[in-house]
Image (cartoon, rainbow, N blue to C red; front, top):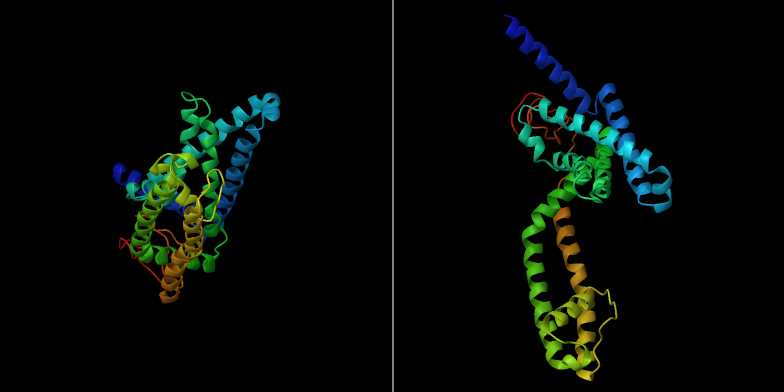
Length: 275
């Protein structure tokens, strides 16, 4: 009997903690997430300030202590998130799960690898939770539509990128043959580098063609660059036009931690758990 009561108490505690930590629909959950955002913002600011040598020399000890305080807080939060979810691996390997883990690792790594603490700026990615906190449903819907469009476009974009890579290899090889080592194109990889820089319209200018034929090819590549840049945008835009907006809320499933449920949903559409 005592075991059952303990199980019920633990289950009730997990449910309450889930509402506070994962949900943004309750006053407690919203307060927790706002406080979390403030802590994340301050921790990122500390890392940025610490990179300034004059400040590090004068306040290095304070920065060190603050970093460890933030890391311990984020570690506790991460452990609680894993403990609360019925299927912890769903959260651990989710986007936010990976970001939350990466937010704590650099400080521990700094004990063995000097300078790794500056990777703590990864914590800035956790500020994406602001979309949940203020229940910006419209932004959530738009972000989900954009993600769906990108997923639907990945095959077309992959084929496009493969074609671009092939094109840069061909152009780089041609420029190597046309210009040769005497004009700075000492090998094909250098030619490919030039092709990428020119095709993307970056134009560093560290290596340029000298022959008339090389300049002609360079002009063609520049013009191609403008057209190539527009293609991925067109592919994604076409997919966006096909997507129908869906009304969603910020509720998180206590089993798999997935979000993006319909407003009238009573069960998780990903795992079937009651919401």
